[in-house]
Length: 133
Ligand SMILES: [Zn+2]
Image 1 (cartoon, rainbow, N blue to C red):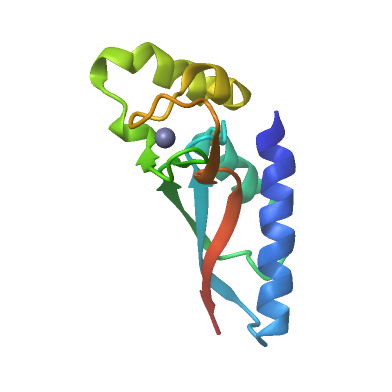
Image 2 (image 1 turned 180 degrees about the vertical axis):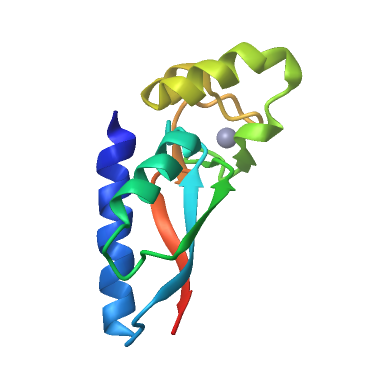
């Protein structure tokens, strides 16, 4: 159910940015959804359609853009994407997608095998752009 809380946050931020920029009517909002963020875009979209009524975003179209997860090894500096993980590891991808916190127990650096890496992309949800007038 965190899609509704997320929708509220997205809407609140969109309206704040619009006000800061002097936009009176938001036409389009581009929202980036990290691959490791377990968000159902359909529920998020539904929540936004309901919550936007009566706000500056009343007529806005919310577009979702997926951001692939990217990791950086702390041991050798190698950078790789979750999508680089081979097809034979589809089960792992699935597990990581639904339980992002398990990423460190499933994923290893493909270069040196170290489990010590940081998530550089694909975590979190943010607003990429807002259009309106
Ligand atoms: Zn490494």
